[in-house]
Image (cartoon, rainbow, N blue to C red; front, side, top):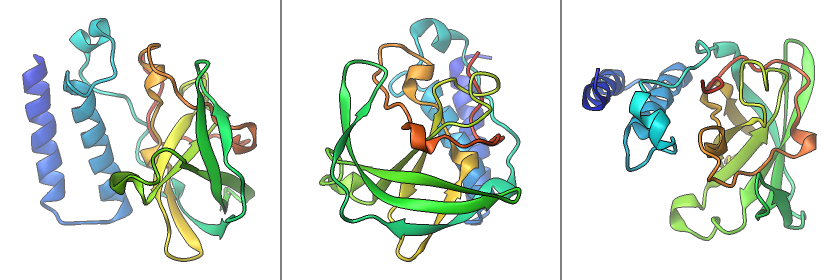
Length: 201
């Protein structure tokens, strides 16, 4: 199957999904997968190396797990000072801790820090964007060794929805030419997050 055929099939699947007009978390997770595959199948937006792009058909995902769509308690941390997050290169990315998400998975109390990119927050496209990098026990076995990311929006209240089915790999998982933030140590989860994008083979 050539690349054009793959893109057409992905578009058909995505269109069928969106025509349902269902904004449930499960449907949104499916849409996320379709859009991510479209991005990686397009030579203009794909982070893949030329070699991997030639054979690319689809990313691998865990089955969508509704139990890992979490409504977490959100606490704003307005007085945090900006800091430099370590990346996979010598570059230091400027972030500020925006808040803390607390939640329970399988009876275990957990929390993650949520960040805002200093350089992006003044841009219209990203003014509501929050960044959630994390690591978990699946790293280096089923998922990318350095951890994964979830994109979030600034919540309007004291809860925030974290859908781990929408966890994705940094571009560095596919191509070493990129510079990617490394999840801070405090964002390590001592459990398996069996949702989202799997390791790229």
